[in-house]
Each structure stands twice: as structure tokens, then as C-alpha cells.
Image (cartoon, rainbow, N blue to C red; front, top):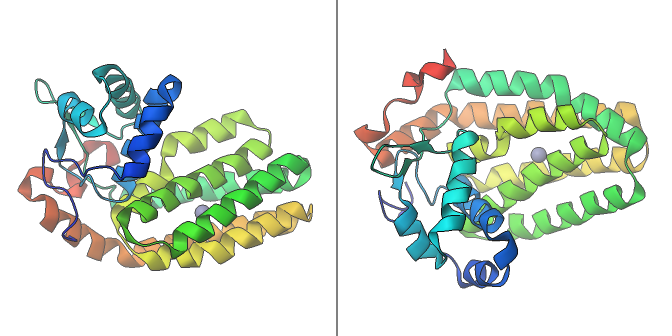
Length: 261
Ligand SMILES: [Zn+2]
């Protein structure tokens, strides 16, 4: 594990930018806290197996306990944290290989179909929003460090969510959203190659949607998911070893999660 990762009970301090952002948007505070925690999960600044408490988070983020509690409740509902009686919350171990393959399978069923629909139905405004997202991701891919990596992962998730939204099928969008694919994938490893490789594939998807070419959009999405699957599968064993080393025996073996059998 890289030396800027966080040990149990000790949260990474936020960048001053994040702190300013949190201070400003009081109305959406729980959302901001949620996004900040997701970013820290994806960038492995909060390591699998570690514990977080409402108290410590409120101190770290400089906000009251209410938005922290709201954000953690949402994360618990999404299986991103696990409540530990009298001890706050635990960050669950990374997904198992079985879960990884299952997620890939459901994405291959839903996302190429969503991209096909998006090519037929996306509004001009949605196409420009997709383009802006990719521009932001390009900057983040060039950026350095875990926070940029986590932020890239958040935009990646938002890009896929907007493709599904542009397809106009809210049930498909919700089903994909519940998987939290990108949180789980980015938690597997920290590897900048992943972000560079994804950029070109995202461009292909956007070009096909912008060109109103449903077949090309479905194909490009399918290729992206297959290639992304190859990238993470190849690194899966290595990441497993690294994460277990970092979080110690406390985290448990990833394969011990009963939901995954
Ligand atoms: Zn992607």
C-alpha cells in the first residue's frame, strides 16, 4: 500500500479545495459528504477493512454530525459501508472475483443496450454534457495522486450514468446505479494505466452517440466493458494481495463474504 493511505480510524485530511466546497454548499451537505467519502473510497484513502466513526468524520470534514449520519446511512443502504454496533462503520473488503465477473455480466447485458438507445434518444444538451464530462476526465487522468484517481472514478461513474439516463429507461439506470461498479473497481487497485486506457474507449462511445449511430454505440460500449474487464481481471490477484497486506487480518479474506456465493 502506498504510504499516503490511511490507517484504521484515521481519515485522510481533505484537500483545502474539498473543505472550501463543503463549507459553501450547506444545502447539499449530505450529498457533498457522500461524494467526498466515495472519492476517498475509490482513491483508497480509506482502506478496505478500516473503521470510520461519525465523530471522527465530523471533525475531519468540519461539518456537523447530521450530514455525516445521512451520508453514512445512504452508503450503508448501498452496501458501501457496514454498521458495527457501538463502533461506527466498517469499510467492507473489496469485491470477490465471483462478484466481479457477475457485475461484468450484468453490465454487458444492460449497458450496450443503453448506449444504443442513447444514440437514438440523447438530447443535444445531453451530448454536450457527456462531452464536458470527458474533458474533465482528461484533466483528471493527467493529474497525479489518489484523489485525482478517485475523482476520475466518480466522473467515470457519472459518464455511464448519463449514458443510461440519455437512453430514457430509468429502471435500467437504477439497476446499474445500484451496482456501484466504479466504486468497486477503483477500490481494487490504484493504477493510472486504467484511466488512460478508458479515455479512448469513452471517446468512441461518445462519438457514436453524437453521430446517432446505435450499432456503433452499442459496439463501443461493449468493447469498453470487455477491455475494462480484462484490465481489472489481470490485476485482480495482485490487488487482492496488496489490499490484504495493507488492511491486515482484521479485514478478512475477500472470499469470506457470504453474499457472494
Ligand atoms: Zn467507463
